[in-house]
Image: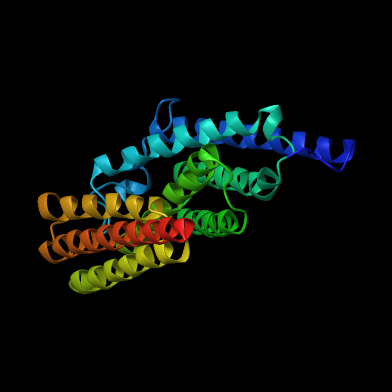
Length: 274
């Protein structure tokens, strides 16, 4: 869509494009530091190991975190795509570009907080990231996609990011409570973990239903839940109750999301033929 607003609007659009690229670069540098590639301490060793796969009862097993590679690649692809001249003055880019840039900055900032500050500040950081992703996700619904690139690089990317960070927030809070809570809380770990996982399942279904059955938030949640199940059934700390609950919730979220998406698609096709 052409820019009807003249040079002033085109300058602001160019600033937005540069901001998205800058935010993405910052996120990648922070990720390199957080992974230890640039000399920083790997995340699993930070905060006395509280953020490791065995740091709490709701921490996913290590392989779960490979989803960050997919999210980062999609965000990099988005940053490149939105910088094209054809995307500069599009209304959807104006509606979403700054929000996506903010999520990239907050993503990288969490790693900085984990590397150099305290565990409570990492909780604050990831809650802010989750809030920004929620707003971005809502904006993707209010500003509908106009093509395949929109659906993949904006909608799917934001959905995966939101779904994973929703689960990561649970794990981060759990790590904080485990590290700083009284020892007596350990006796209630199974009951609390089951309750939280049920809430995560409700959230996953609500995200799918509220977004006309987009599947990516649910897929990210299911991925994380499956690795929580693996961690509690095969790793430490061991908890059969939490592991089984995580597996059951993952199956329910996946089934409801996929069935809902299929039914919604069938209704759309029927209406189109009517």
